[in-house]
Length: 464
Image 1: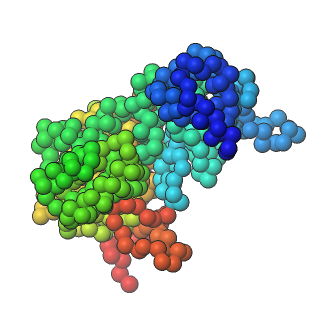
Image 2: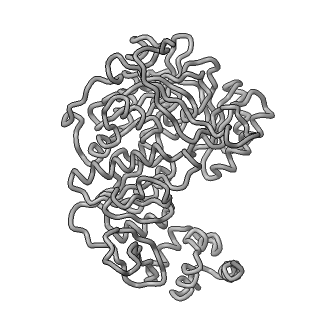
Image 3: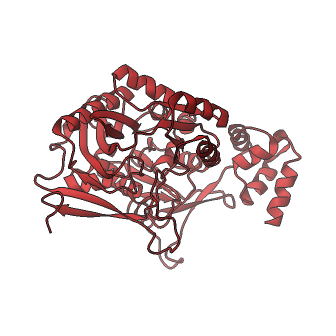
């Protein structure tokens, strides 16, 4: 560590053009990223990367020998190193699809995304692709030896993903099944010329950008809570005066509702804006009018750019304001009329087609005083996809991966949504409170659960 700090100090006194290939090699072997070198030399990361590649300083990928040299290993595990010249990744023999996993998460937070990535690998492999998984979390199904044809244990950063892209030359990259972590890379990967499978990065940004998304909903004549974006506390206070309290405040591009909170006054606003800014410093803070006492719902759908299939609608047991990963919910909805459900489905179709979704889309609704409001739309896999898939028998993640690869929904014999006839499916979250005495047991917009269980009955509630 002392040597690394000394090296960083030395680099901080140099300009980028003063670094030769040997200096780059030393920096890389000490674990400094392109972003680290950029910060030390006052340059952009892209400039550092370009300079490094011009000098011929590129990593190699070696195979993990799982047989300790006794046998020829059959597991295509790979890791990056700057201490070798030859890459051991197998040459491409058929089209390759690279899938970005969910990366590191708190316990229980990446399970649903891991499910989606693994199912995508199975489906794309069956469709004739050679599948390549990039994930740095060994405690996941997506990093099992038989999930994909090739596995790269690498962090989900732009530099590391691009190094894998250079090594395997994929025909397309899947960014919408691993949650927010790979989504943050979509724009940069596209700008670097990497082909993105499925929904375009611009559509992903449109759904995240409050102003653009509000304009889209206005054009579709869809109701939504008043909202705003703020780059700091002063802008947030101005937005609060215009929208009015209570407000739901959250960072953008975060996983599990991290840094999110409901505020009722200026003091709470200052506290939560500071936390949200710390969580996601490079993105704005979102402020939405909070609808107290509303019924919240999740809808997951597939879209191929022309047709939309609604996989299911989940009605939350708790009122709006509890993170969907913590809220118990029921499929089909137990209190909403067929008219309200049909309205949600119609709104979902309009939004998915307007965004140009190709793959999965999750839309969160709030119903208050008979009015259906759109809280947000996420053109990606959601935490509720595995639950709906198991309840309905429709493998949404597998179908989404086929759609992203170019298949049309008409090619699949899809049943009506809503689950199996005569059954109610309830998801309940598993909380850590019993194992950690003294932990805050109050639920809110930030996810706390570490898993979930499913209950099945012929009525709601089940008679005792």
